[in-house]
Length: 328
Image (tube, rainbow, N blue to C red; front, side, top):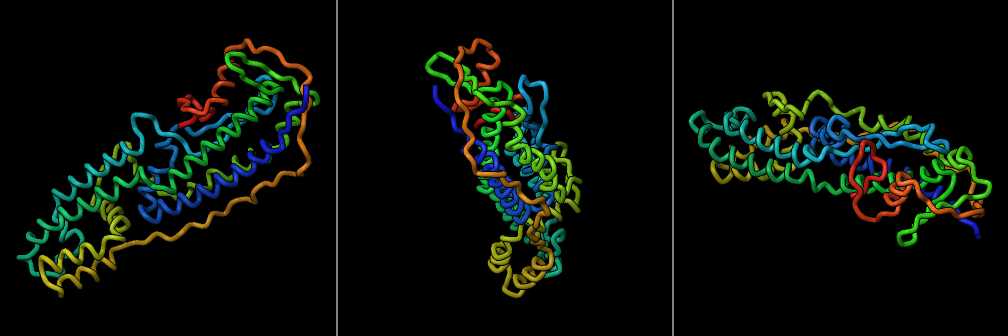
């Protein structure tokens, strides 16, 4: 009946895990450098991406499993755009109801009678800036790359999970579902070929978010002066010239340059985080991983058939209680 080779599949467990951790670190630093460790939490933390677990089968029959945590998926009703819209609304309301000239210290660059005229112009400028920045949350390319890498890793684990759970491999031809029994394959031996990857993820994934600031609850966001100051000190880091040019237009060069000095003292540029992770696991050898098909039987179990369909499906698979089979 022939052989089935699994070297490439086992290789992909290692390679896709390494790629995922690389993409995660790149996304983390991109997000934190642009938005800070407080806002960065809503992008990455399981408090918001609440479905985080991926079930890993370790023996046949689904009688023994482990769980690894990956970048989670948001509930459909509170995705990243939900949090972005809430932040926009509350930041805009704060700006409209506060003396932002004095809040940012710009009053020290002008006469008292100029503050109100400054506010009229500054409020609109700040809101326009923040709307554009916050609207960019969902378009962050590093985050999109990370989510794609996570989905690829999920799909890879789903494939090896099926083999371990069923101690064989599944095939679909039209409306016919088959299970191939593989001579010499045992679930524990097959799982052992990549178990070090599972251990690596379990031991290292939480390290990826441990430096995020969890003091802000974006599920019930309440803005204080200190919190808005923290947000703006990072969000405005690329907007200094625009604000200074506004003051050059509505006031004079001397005021504008004083505003620049005040902004330069106010702005915070987050540093890049270097993660202290364990050494990435390496597959023990490059020998072929081949099994001979000893028999092929029709699959009649609807649960197993559904799992096989989810694995083979190239389209969208809805989120369940875990990340298993999730595709977007």
